[in-house]
Image (cartoon, rainbow, N blue to C red; front, side, top):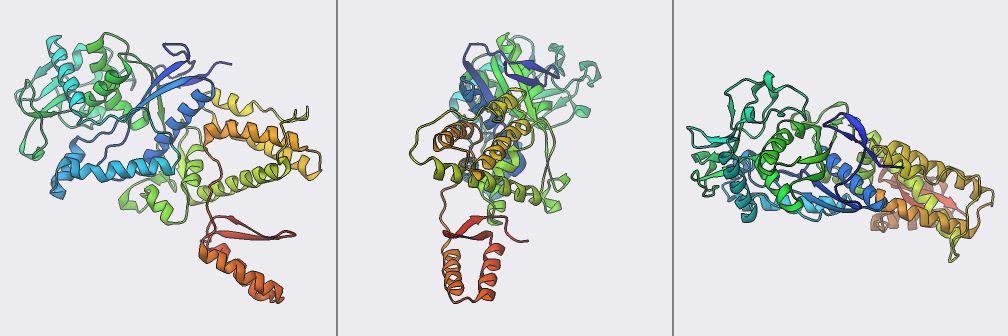
Length: 469
């Protein structure tokens, strides 16, 4: 079965064919490091992580690039307001970003180019010089260099609007704008006093690159003139990715990207995420509320990337419950399997291929997870009836390990906090003294803290659950 993905350019689900058999080059738009990344950003990064992991699951070798935008309008405003250098201002946000990647179990890209690296600045200047020489760019009265969009008739193809609808002769110096004020965009911005110490020398004088040329230079410089897959959030389609296409193809003469993939926006409790609305969450905010990176990952990954995701605390609680169910099933399999070798599964088992086949069809994670949990249900029934052998349990564990290479949802190896352990010990004493009232009170206290206690023939079993509201 071929892999099929939705191409933003054609607006169709297509069979995926890379340039070279067995090898895939992916460029993913990374963070602008002017603040801590929020959970909306991480929806895109987790979708891209799932894409890479599934390609590898299907046997492809993947080379992925994720850029760090450390010079643009936002980072310059931030360092000026803070009264520090650009490097000093962006450094803590870069560090926090990599910590968050690890917390969310997002695989590190092969390359994390930074826009301010000299080799990338040099390539940006070279590409702009080429565009000027070919008539695609010009230096304006303000000393900045702009791309002349009328020289690229296909401009607008990704966002699906006509070049004729744009106003002629308009120049846009801001990195971000919309179709209503779209026009020639800045490739190189002449220095002004608002830039402070942030500038580089160029053939057109002191200045700095525009946001769009940064990604074109880093993408083609590392992956070559034609890229297999370019990803990002839907807000990147215009103007950023549209501009990337125009300037890259005018320089290289090659189609820039074979497959464009974009994920939908994240809403929080049904509304657009905004600091003013009080629903703006970083990963650190959620962890401070008692949620783990694994749970946040599951909540963000469990809805297909092309569908809008409404992030709620009820959704986080559901993610925790699903993971708890998966963990309990895994523990049962381990206890049954022991040191046995794998053995064939019963012939009436649900399809073991449903997980991979779901992801083959445009990363349909809902179908993939449905396939996984159908196997969980079926094998739990078999274990309840004593009809699953240790060898069959081992086969299921081996299968699950392959799925975790894609999902990255392995149980966290965390210990019970000391304060919860103390309550457990008090509860043992209370039950030994037949003080059922105190036993129940201690159980409820632990549940309020996010730890559920079950009494079994082997003693107390403690698992994490959603903390009480």
